[in-house]
Amino acid sequence: MTGSPAQRASGLGTAPVFKISAPYATLAISSMIATYLWISYSNPDRKGLAVIVQNAIFQISRRLQVFLQQSRRTEENDTWRPAVVCLSSSSFQRSAAFDLLRWIAHRYGFGTYIHFIEGYLSRATHADAREKLQRLVRMVDLTEGNVFVDTLVSPSFTTAISQLVQLPGISGKENNLILLEFSRDQPEGLTRIIDNYQLIAATDFDICILGSNERGCGYRSEIHVWITPNDYENVGLMIMLAYVILGHPDWRQGEIKIFAIFPAAEVAAERDHLADLIRSGRLSISEKNVEVIPQESDTDRKSIINQKSSDASLTILGFQGKALKRQKSELFEGFASIGNILFVNATKELEIVQDEESAEPPAAAKEQVGKEPVPDDAPAG
Image (tube, rainbow, N blue to C red):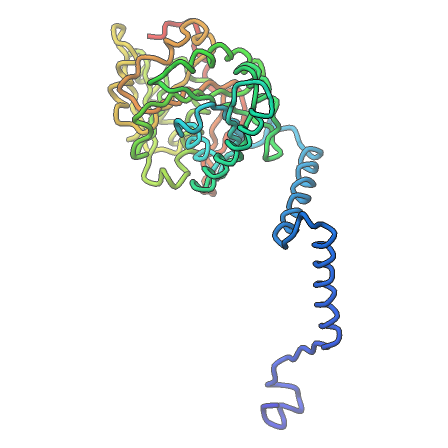
């Protein structure tokens, strides 16, 4: 013992001492070893501490899912987060949809990626699905994606969509957005998306259709969001998705640019409207990144978009259901100068509310606010 006699007498200057009884310590360690050996012996097919811990995590996850379902509140006034489920049969031919989903699900959203295998369920298709699932899990591991992956065997794209809209959300929150994809270089897959649009729309899901080409997203430097008189219902979701995507490290050097096309007589009013949104914090973007473009009567919107967004990494455009029904595949064509395009259709308008104290993207509540959208049967040009 150290310290002066006075310190020793008063107890000062000495470190606290913890005593452990050797017999009890030996008994505790022996009990733990015996418990582990008994569990290993009684479960010969599940050996290893890692498996035991994994099983415990499964039990915790199960209880959390049940708790979330039982305590689910009305979500009308909750902060909106993208809970996206993606369906693709081209997972190993092109990665555009998978990449987009992992960007959305990185921090702010939730993502479920389903690889579609067309055919009837059999021993062969089941084995094929399991093999492809392992490949998908490997893709998630290599990209460090925060995405849940699975496979779906179904006899047709329509039946796959029917199953997709009924999938439970992996987060305990219902899915609210469906992401579909097609190759603009091989647009055969677009037809079946158009044919099944009404089926998806009937379930009140927001719908995003990704049209990809060989250019991809390039250097991931700029996201262009285009606003037209027909897009007041879509614009909140379009801008929200742009912010969420920009939060991924792959886009650390990226920025958002907003382009608004309006008839020349409405340009001044729309410019003031966007400036008010920026000053009020509802649009967290510099005014220099917002451009209002007058459209002359003899000018086609698609030619303007091709010109302005030719160097964009990702272009986000809105579309309306009635316009899709009328124009079909023509609605997605005519953008030869642009890379990947995300077409967005929102069931409800999202009001963007900037949270100044948070580093998260702006929050959005599902509310019908703002201007009334122009009817879908208005001229598209």
